[in-house]
Length: 283
Image 1 (cartoon, rainbow, N blue to C red):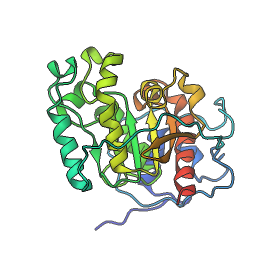
Image 2: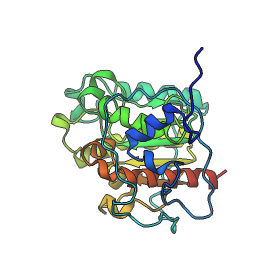
Image 3: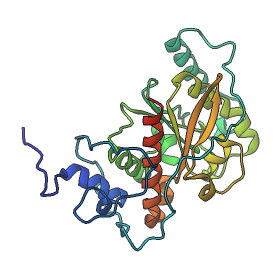
């Protein structure tokens, strides 16, 4: 088996590829580089070896110093939201409850979105994951494949996770607020959210994550019950109360937006560092 080589700066070629895709290669452990802002008092974790990145498409790299910085990332006072109760009908055994929820989502006919779907998109990853990632709703390819975040945005998300030694197969569970594709990828309607979001809340209760990373405006506004712009929501630690337990919530941009606006990847990198600091603080 060939041994992966490290450069003179100690960085593996796989990790350099991930950081290049994320657009922050120059900000990671290179001689003379400027480190991204992170929560104060938190030490950065050492990079972990990981398999080569599947991302082949080049993405523009954001300069380390010319970009407008969002300012130091700092933990702020938690923002509580509505309590999410555990449904009384949920089976006591977690594995049975998870399987029952999967069956319920698969057969759901609660709103009109069921008429146009190919299949529901329950989510992907381990139900015992430490992190939960929440997006908006399935797109065309997600509807066909039955998994969230596929295609170019999915590859970028995988690279983002790999850059902090996380993967959707082991460390995170990825779900959407809405489990069926809205026609033409439009924003879900309020009645569709009302019928579908309880499934996400039950997923959160069963996974019991140490941290929730919300991706994109719609998912953030829905989960935090606010109409605030995403720019004002990111860079802070929010709080979601689930079955009497407060779960920290970090907001970041949707990978599809980052593909359109690669200069914003530096802010997404800061959000990942904030999420890491929150996870470590909870241990």
